[in-house]
Length: 277
Image 1 (cartoon, rainbow, N blue to C red):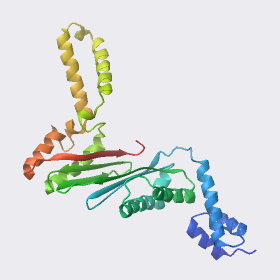
Image 2: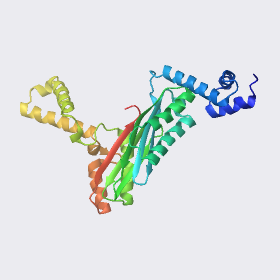
Image 3: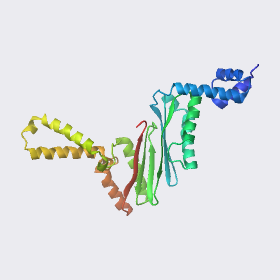
Image 4: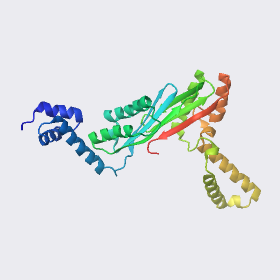
């Protein structure tokens, strides 16, 4: 039967498939648009299934605050080209829309179906890796940040005040996280196994130092402890030199901002999101 160009165009606009694919599907479906759409979807699903093992190292982190809630979604894909695609960006926004509308706090089937729908259309492997919702307590200041590459993002909640200076500090802390990517928030978060491993590394380095060999054991122990303390300060957010004032640590800056605002401040949620990690 004759397949009209208008029908091919309409199917293409609806599915995003190529003109020739749409024409073949319509021919196979004897001109039935709904059946042709089903055929294209099935072919798309098959294509996605074939690519399921391919790495999804590209993508974006999406963040949105709505009132007292902050939603985070991480969607990965195979190529940077797709990550910059308008449909892919719209997908991330649709996921956040659904999270707020349905009250989702984790990955749900509806959200996975949204990803699968676009993956089928584009025929590239995609994964919804993360969905998280952060509650902002009353009287707290919250800030979000997404880096220009959309692969690094941060959320910081400072509890105790909604003063403008505190809001600015929270935003600066987001910038700090993105810039320095600390491995831990506080020293209490660092596993003892990691600390023990670092002690062994530093001890081995000291043993190879001829000047260190003649020092008393108690002096060596003190030097080793000092190295560990310095290292922890470099990898823990609250102990790092603050991005906007490297003469003080993040925790010290928190105290200073609290005094200015006339409030006792503390960190609530502090989160760094790096695509694929």
